[in-house]
Length: 126
Image (tube, rainbow, N blue to C red; front, side):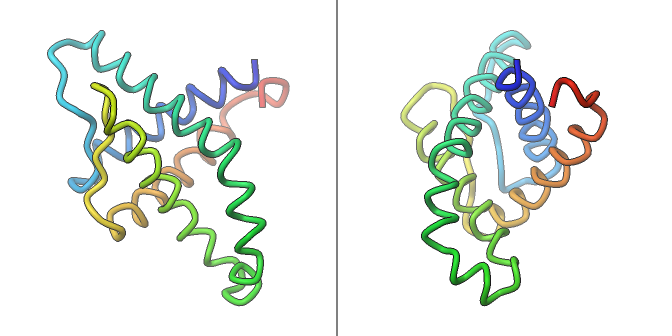
């Protein structure tokens, strides 16, 4: 259940980020159902990347976290978003991220949106 909730939260945050920023776009689709399917696929890839790749990157970059007093967290968020865009570029459901700076701002937006959405979810579902 926790994975499904995280998947839905990530899907909403990615949609909000793509809606807000011009540098981050979902592949154009013909219908609402196709858009929801695309968003589900991108959110699933993003969730899996954050579950498996991010902890390894965080562990390996621990000195940078300490050196920058945690601001390297933003860089890791941007890299995870760019990795998600790269992985989904091999499918018909793609997330396009135009450059590192858009990924940095997008990662920040997704982090804040995820935090806000998780505050709204009752404690048992988190």
